[in-house]
Image (cartoon, rainbow, N blue to C red; front, side, top):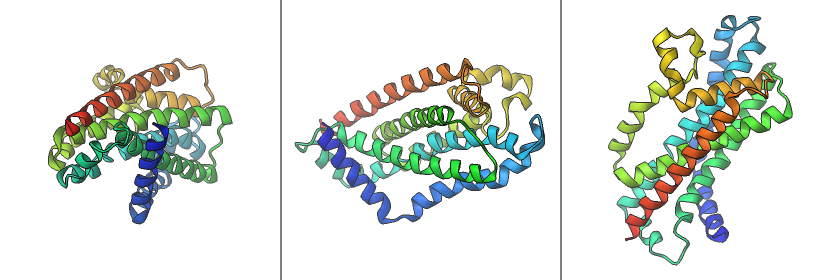
Length: 249
């Protein structure tokens, strides 16, 4: 089990770094958001300093990486389905779940690299955060990324179409971002948006991240966010593994 997952993880990482421009773009996008957008929002927070803006926007940028950076990872699988590569792998003696877990593991490695880059840039801009809060934030980002990556693999296996997959993701992306308070705190939204925002799991993750960066480790949003995304990750991982069985069968 571990051996096959490691083999597929190594295979996916080698493929990713054969063309390093895409991993580089994945890191640069949230950094640009942090550098160019956070200073614009500093007057929206108590104190009105860049450090206040960074404490609110940095966890949002990390969750943006975790969710939307991993959400598109399944597109590569569609090409392998179309070319018959995935079918041949699925009927091989290799442990079948490793086909999905190796891809998800690659996404987790990329997330760690991107998160550390964002934290490093935010630190240079004046952000300060405790070690425990940082580790919890990385764990929350990993849970979010695990959900997004396994959902992406499952969606790719279900639709087997780039058009169908991109339309499905784009349909939900904007509402998730706006109702999650990624770009701006949801407290600035109209009353009707504030009323429905708690039904968005991303809202709880963003609130938990901002509580962690503010040093409020006892905030109720933290265990809620972890429970939600661990559950969602378990559901979507199970879905993607079951979808893979249909490819082989």
